[in-house]
Length: 149
Image (cartoon, rainbow, N blue to C red; front, side, top):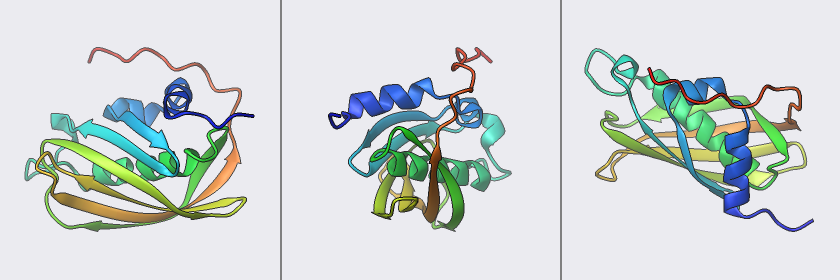
């Protein structure tokens, strides 16, 4: 079987239904060779009382970015979070980009890291995580078109 291209991986990812990531507005822009990139701009309801991206939204972005990096080398598999450690270094404002990197993998586990950067290139948050490779669901409904609200 030929090695999937980045375009193949992104197309497969976009065909998979991930309701929470879709709801937040995550856009996968890279997924190949143990790396991933997701772009995200927080909506007003995703901000905290200081008008910066809520830590929970940042952690979700890190989680999904790490899963994409893990899956970039095994796109036919799912990857579920076993553990995750997050560090918040500065407020995450404006359009954000998260970049993930697979550090090591075994047959069943992936060890991954990801960071979120603001539009000036400042690192805002960082996480490390362990993910378990699992069979991907085949009974999931097709991805719905994004809502306009």
